[in-house]
Image (cartoon, rainbow over all chains, first blue to last red; front, side, top):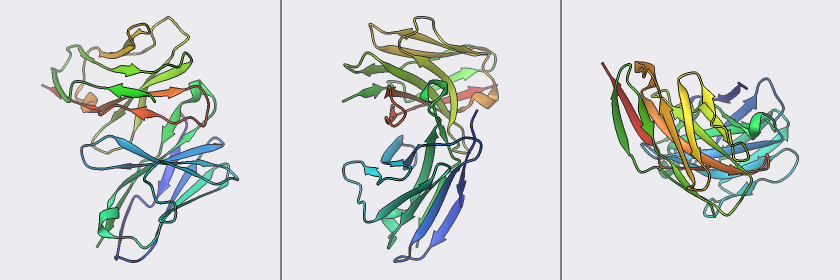
Amino acid sequence: GAVVSQHPSRVICKSGTSVKIECRSLDFQATTMFWYRQFPKQSLMLMATSNEGSKATYEQGVEKDKFLINHASLTLSTLTVTSAHPEDSSFYICSAATGLEGETQYFGPGTRLLVL
Amino acid sequence: AQTVTQSQPEMSVQEAETVTLSCTYDTSESNYYLFWYKQPPSRQMILVIRQEAYKQQNATENRFSVNFQKAAKSFSLKISDSQLGDTAMYFCAFKITGTASKLTFGTGTRLQVTL
């Protein structure tokens, strides 16, 4: 299957700072990437859909000014959590769609964010 | 709007036995895909199996197979010869046709494989 990486895998930051998470498709080009948030023992919640070269589409209730998404190339999307607060602490996962293989989304390993 | 329901929050199976995880969905679309993803303790989401709605034949991947009942909107996962490494959270997911279309996940079933 296709490989998606995320960096960093874990980050601890102080309240009020910004954190950037990178999502890369390593062996395929992804015109569309997706960002999810997962709380402990819960399912994945889609935050936004990221399309290369255009603005991201955010799900209802997700603050676009707080969660900045940039999809600058066909292999890289970034999520920046701005002015992070303790309630932003969570597990963030990205996925990328190949457009082939039944339009399967392949997932990155996730980033654990802890805001102190 | 699409919904996916997994009615079994937790299940347990002994090693080498067979277990079936249930999933139902609701949609008015005719062209779509269904997936089972596995999330082990590492939290990496791993594709287990995929089914195209237009295919009548049930998908199989080694020890994993599905029972896809389109009219009943049911998509269950059967794991044969269960192994300890199958212990994980299993999510059923739905998406309509289109690369940019999003996945709708069920709430998950936590499977524990025991000795």
